[in-house]
Image (tube, rainbow, N blue to C red; front, side):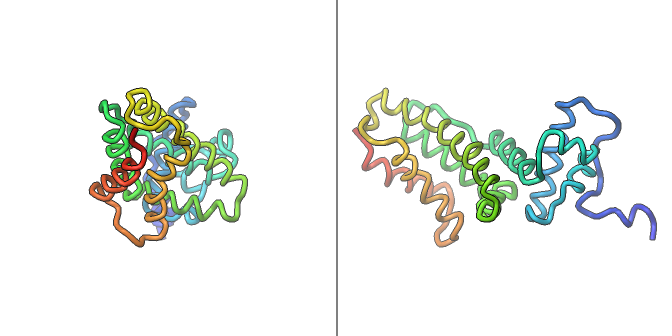
Length: 203
């Protein structure tokens, strides 16, 4: 057996050679992680495989992350940030519709399917789940609250409604459908979900 044939498929083709500066190494690690996780489940991808693909040592990974699950979370967040914007169309209803459509498209992608794996991982790793809630869930909710507040300021949304309840109404059905698969997720469904929520939120 040749040396090249003994390299695991998931660790093949590292793209970086030699010593890298910190930002470059971090970017390489996150890119390598998301590429591997688009093809294999979280529990199947190892820190060794990520390091091999990124062209860094495993020690370099552990310099910034305590475990590979948090590498995966950062890679997921980076990819989502580049794919899901916070629009400002001048209409809260349109903003939430466009944003929810982008969320659904992302969750339907190979990268986005990591979401359900994070939920599963969190059932047996409380520390990871706390990080997931803080760095993903809370951060995303804080971001979309800007759309919510603009709607209140323009008089489109009732100011007396608890924003946490409202955001659950808008985004909760998408997460439920994502995890259970009992109903479709697409642009038309996103529009329908936002319309159903906003019919009860309008001023």
